[in-house]
Image (cartoon, rainbow, N blue to C red):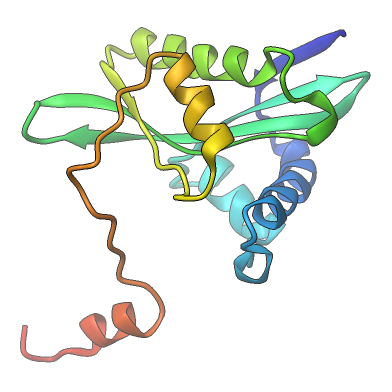
Length: 162
């Protein structure tokens, strides 16, 4: 199977958004997928872009993507990439494409002097857990994931006490 993987370009934003929507559906989170092409373009290629991406193609059709951005792990004093998304269309899974994409992200991180890649996996997604463990990922059950989002975020912003 002939697959090409490369860094994302601005022209690929619509295809990435389509793949993101497919990913959201796969994770049973389709109703929460609010990304627009304009917003994705802004965070990937706009004036203050901070998100990087890869896209994989089969016969010029986008079939997979990965999205990642720099972060700092304070206690370890390490820079790394946070792997926000990696998604491979169903017909292209289990043929090494996901592994190749993770390895490319690792090589890009290493080229920048980064020392790690962090990510999350949904609790029910055993295939993803097995995939990452096969690649040697270290599972960390010591943390709980929280977020300020929607009204919990806006109430923080609106608090005039600070």
